[in-house]
Amino acid sequence: MSVSVSRNEVADAPLEARERTILGLTAEGWLRILMPLAIGVIALGAWEWAVRVREVPSYILPGPLEIGRTLVRDWHTLSVSLWITLQITFAALFVAAALGLALSVLFAQSRVVELSLFPYAVILQVTPVVAIAPLIIIWVDDIRIALLICAWIVAFFPILSNTTLGLNSADHNLQDLFRLYRASRWQVLRRLRLPTAMPYFLGGLRISGGLALIGAIVAEFVAGTGGRASGLAYRILEAGYNLQIPRMFAALVLVSLTGIAIFLAMTLVSHLALRHWHESAMKERR
Amino acid sequence: MTGVVAAGPSVVTLQGVGKRYANGTLAVQGVEMAIGQGDFVSLLGPSGCGKSTVLRMVAGLIAPTTGRIEMAGDTRGAASALRATGDVGFVFQEPTLMPWSNALKNVMLPLRLAGMSRGEAADRAAAALASVGLAGFEKSYPRALSGGMKMRVSIARALVTKPRLLLMDEPFAALDEITRHRLNNDLLTLWQDERFTAIFVTHSVFESVYLSRRIVVMAARPGRVVEDIEVNAAYPRGEVFRTSAEYAAHCRQVSEALHRAMGE
Image 1: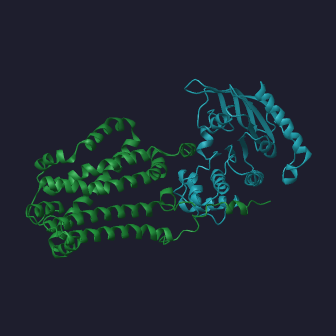
Image 2: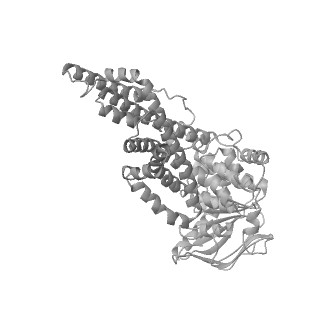
Image 3: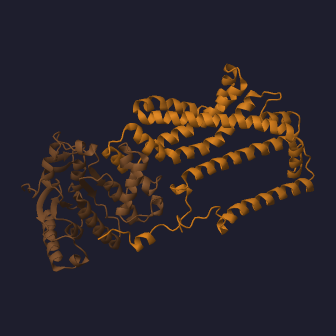
């Protein structure tokens, strides 16, 4: 007698896991890309048409074409600012991810540490960054570091709370299994709790990416630093003072595009990390 | 109810074992049992009779509040010595696989936890997967496997350490009947090939009669052992046995015992 898997057992395996396409260019995939694009084009067209027909002056509301032209013309100044804002955003996100992960692992190891520190993390989260940004800017000499701290404060909490939740969500039977085989604390952390927390951590990262950008922009607004080395928020302020409204819009467009790009990048990272196993990275079952 | 003495040298002995949970619930009381080397024993009973509790105590996952559980060759009176060498395998009701690892890595887990090198663990895990009929599915993730195949991976993981004792907690309850029959047959084949001692928790009379040499019937409130029935039918058992008059007679006998246990 020999043991073999039966045909109907193999046939029972979920289909979608076997018929995966790489770029998802199904009818639904195209629809998902084309429909929002069509809406966007229609809205921009209507905007441009309204501005021209009603002859709205560009210092009140410039049309999309003029904003585009300004973006190209001022690209040199704006790109320098974009680069600075990006640096602050990603530095803050990186520190938030590293510290959030480290602290949540610490929380997961010791209930006492979690109970004593978690309320302070909450306080950090609920205090509006606009309110403490001036203080931080006064206390910290280097303005870049001050901005980074502000962005970090905003980005830190979602990662910490999500990852803490994830580390405590390990399957009970799997925990028993690890206990049965006498796994050490470290083995349980590395092979069970951290992988379990992965989707939670990545979910937190996706939220924090956008928040880090918002934190950086808000802090720049508060700091209001001028000069060569200033970010997109200062370009918006500056353009507002000078009534260069098309330029203000151009900077705004860059901020939005940056936010979207960060979100897409985090979604891609999440998809790549989870594609083999997590429900969120799987195609829906029919 | 008195304890039944095992025919061969016993692997596990339970003496007056009871378990009261922290909330005051008396899960099991006064369980006396000796499980012989190489035996296939089913714990059969209605929900709440504490059969899973007994299994988890034997595994050492929870400690009894009264009585003793002894493992052969272990003087400390606990499952610890056996567990330390991976001598006990456990199959849960759910496949309980790590969704982020493929089949091979799931089966490698007990060996890797014990500190075995990656290469050697992979070889042994591949052999264990082949023994449950899953050669060629090493790289498949649990998400891509059917319920029956996931349970096979779970069994391979329990057997990869070559345990002396295999504990199973209603492993096939969630599977369709065809797959369950198939896995019952394969489990018996593995049991005869690898000569481990098996304790199998189930609430199915038919499954317990088909698989076991011995059936321990339990009753609820409080959980206790009420009858101990021997199934005197030769192995290997196949589909012919499943339709035989002998099988039907054993099922009737066990079924009546179960009704007595529930009617008390």
